[in-house]
Length: 460
Image (cartoon, rainbow, N blue to C red; front, side, top):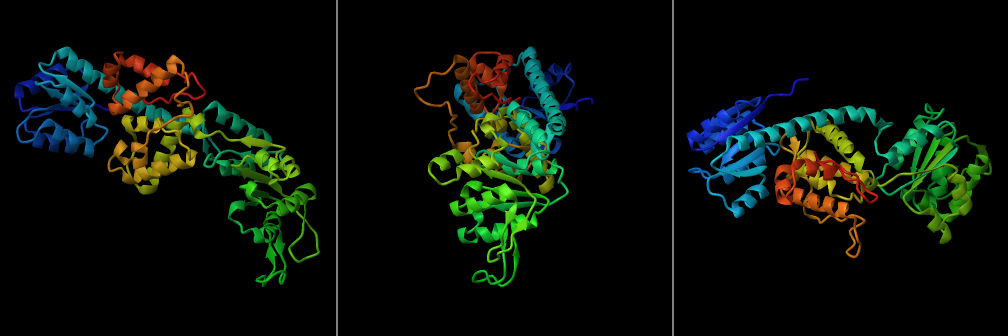
């Protein structure tokens, strides 16, 4: 597929400068639009939506920074290069802080203009290819409602496939928000009883006195308020699967009764002497450390061993850096469709902010953040301003960020590069200037594996 023609808008009150830019960019496959009046130039940008804007800083009635603010507000994915005949470090820093991609001074060398615009065009095409590739990868790395290509998740998917046909009980562990319920659903769908019921019980939401009735049912008159017979979860799921979420919250007294069901498949409704046989597969999940609960005499050891014949541990999102771009793409597409918005991606500077988060709430937190960002986004791209304020303002720390820790040099280099990149709004050309290295080296640093346990996320 041929790439779309890139449009460049040049706004400068000096017609000679505009003619110079037009001539300089003739060899590039770009369409050049020009305007000498800043207000008319802004209208041109908002109507034609060029991918690149060359903007003079000093113009009558409306200076370049004012135009820049409105462009960044209306079209955050537009790359703006600010041009001035009166350079000052203060104005350069202010321009980058307010969203400019670059800042160059007059007189403009032909090679410099061609080089800067050429690099931006190539970066845009790389992003287009990346978006296309991400869409294709989503299909490849989509497994039973879950997304993942990291080694940890590939291993989880492989284990689910292997055990789904054979398990009778399974224990899924992991921090809150890692997707334990999705794994339970996948185990059921891939099992020989996929057409039977999957009955779900959130153990943390049941009042302790009603546990037995909820799981095993009761007969009329068994207790105050029991005005009719009730079928319990295990009886309801006969022939299918019971999913006991937050199993660590089950009271000790109920744990012994639950063990009996797992051992011999027998239940008794509350208030009834009759014993019923049930045939169910049981999947339990918890974000608690059951071994610690056993040591504290709050969880039965025999029940733990009965449940954990097969144990699947889900990694936190912080250990799945390779999956972050795919998950972002998945949720953006999902919410764009749900909200009926033409959102097609995330700006590089917003990707930098997202890549620096440790995601204590895991995938659930990421989904919440992107759902909010998609609601806030007014254009085709999610920008930093669309992210929740807590993400934009909080200082992100990783598990290695202890003051007295000695880090490998490569890790120090990677973290400093990320900080500089965030400061300049994701612009790798400007970051390379500040760091005193070339842009290719910035890409290498960002995409090299983390020398510790984590890996860097590509922000290209």
